[in-house]
Length: 95
Image (tube, rainbow, N blue to C red; front, top):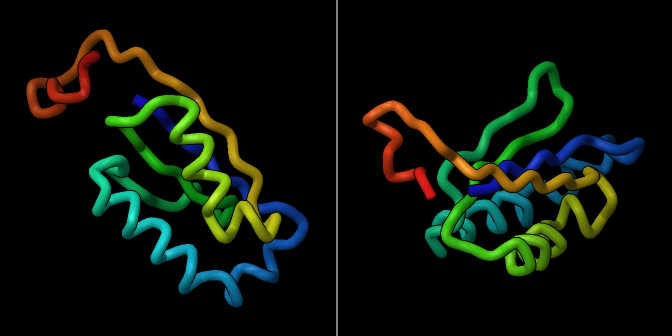
């Protein structure tokens, strides 16, 4: 499982012009069965993605295709998490 942190850069003000393409990129991640959860990092710091069913290399390529990343609106950090325990509702996330 992976956590992707998308933190705004100094080009945050460019976000509106890339938002529609960024939203399509997010939807494609859900459609492909890779993204499980997407949300904002508060307060207005950026966004986060919970991902699985992918390799680190494939996720790096996918993240590089995010219009926000490509336009340097955000910087991306990918964290790989080896889940060891989970609430019963989240057992499907265990490796």
